[in-house]
Image: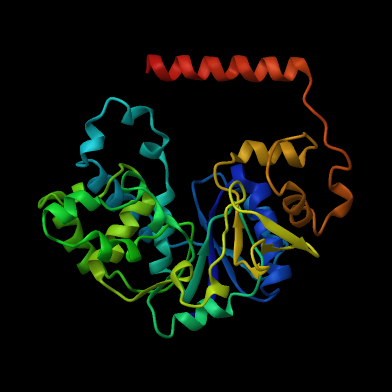
Length: 337
């Protein structure tokens, strides 16, 4: 077992984002740190080709672990109150594979960082691995400040049941797009117990949304009661920064982003709420409205600067019309289904 490494979740659909992430790791973290890609699905032709050009990147091949987490998630989500909603069949979560990122706890890195593929790393991650000397989970997100309806755990229900107070719940809330942890924290015997509690004892109602991997992850970290640290709650103000491309202001210094307030180094920029199609079109030279797109293009074409679009152009009226028609047809097909 290797001592530490980085995981991500990807397939060919997010190829451009994956290449940008891998390049940012090589430039800003280390060219030698091992990276393991968990397959989102079997569409991996471009991913496999990319791996052949990188000595330190591999594919996660423990399909037994992948299937275990798939089964675990589908069985518990099937009893969630939201699963009975007529809208759930039209929700992409019901056919998604984001729960596969939980395979990191069955992987070959003793300690690891998981980072969503739609991110760029901006600095070394030594501080994360150092925190793992004292904690079992390390996060860097702000979900704990969101409204009650937007956080992973059902605060009103937990308070009403006298299980925990909001004051105690909020510091343990977290996302699943970026976290450090250790292998083996969720042995199968514990997961079997949690599955029983979720399905038979109704604890699935502790989760506010259906088919959300972050909500399931929050349940597991809550039940395990293992030590957790979130940089956004650090007593050291230099460690509290933003990370979202579409909401947080950053300053670019030599293609590395810093928190605008205080020029504090950030761990990563997360391009959440942008589709992989947006990035594919951007890389093909289309003028797509993505915040910090120049930074993305820098890392995407870091090893192939000659292929970077020299000028971004708006799509013509025919292209726009065809896309609108395709969007309407898709909506009709979903409605009929």
